[in-house]
Length: 234
View (tube, rainbow, N blue to C red):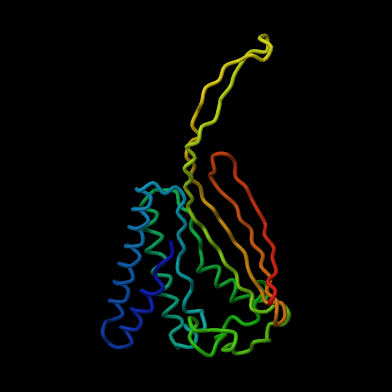
């Protein structure tokens, strides 16, 4: 589960318009974090076994935050939301998978090259990110051969209904292999499916993809798979 960014932007907009105070911003962000905790509790009560919760990135260190002139304030608000979220999750006393995106983003900003980036401090596009295309990039060829690395991650909770019959057989060696058997139902299975990977442009025509997928908690054994592919224009 991942939430909070829109709440942060909305509250910042209200504060900049003079509609609410700085104290109101914190109060409203605390409410948003608490509501996220409540949704996690609802999922857990409904039977979800593997719940992944992301915290907020350090929005103040993004190009948006840096260009706003309020980077330090926005970073502090991101941290405030995360600390409220973390305390709320702790109070649930349930097993969760927590991803610290705040720290990950700061690691990328501190050493972009280690993550395949050239620039982590200024906007990549001349328009809003939702409208960004290859034709609106600030420097389409700035990142060389392996340009525009696009990492991704996916965590889902899978439920399999396997109520198909199978035979369970038993016997004694002394009977020459003669035994008895009875049908049994294969139990349902629920598990986490985790996938991480990235795609990158190879020159101006090709796109390479790489991903690693794995399961966790699967009754009949977990598996891992690696996928490599290349997209060619026709």
